[in-house]
Amino acid sequence: MTRIGGILGIAAVAGALALSAAPALAADSAVMSDFRRFCVATGGDAAKVKALAVQAGWTEVPASAFAEDDADDVQVDTAFMSTDGGLKMLAVMRGEVQPGISGKGCVIAVEPDKATGLEAEAAALARVKQHKGIADNGTVFIYSDTASGRRDLSGQTEEQIIELSKTAPVQGVFVSEQDEMTMIALVDIGAE
Image 1 (cartoon, one colour):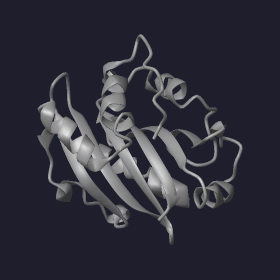
Image 2: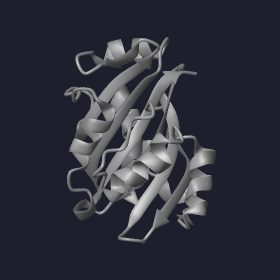
Image 3: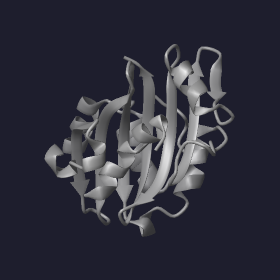
């Protein structure tokens, strides 16, 4: 697994149990609507996500429920589930990509039949090309938002992305199927 792939692997933990203020599409699915509300609007901030989840009536899940052998370097900050409209999981996690480079992720995981069209919605949200070389088991869109606009990192190597993350914000939107769940994650990678 690659270093960035490892932090993107944060998303798999949720399946096992800031974007800029992009305008909502008229036809957002329920999953994308939840993703925008909990992950995008909060920038993946654990305290804000927790407050929204409590307000929405989601049930808190102990972080210990997410322990996995291959995720020792990942810490779950807050996790929730809902059965309103089918099983849904929500988690905010963080971990180390490599020494001095941290990452955090906000993840929504749902039953696959609830995620039809999610990759296209993720592409529309990210507004960049799909990166073909980072994720082993999903679709990922990687970019950096700067004062001059959004920089598409789809053509960058993992090493170039890691180097950039030392001086500029690097974000990604990741969609994957894992453990009979489909998940979408907002991931931020940057210097500590």
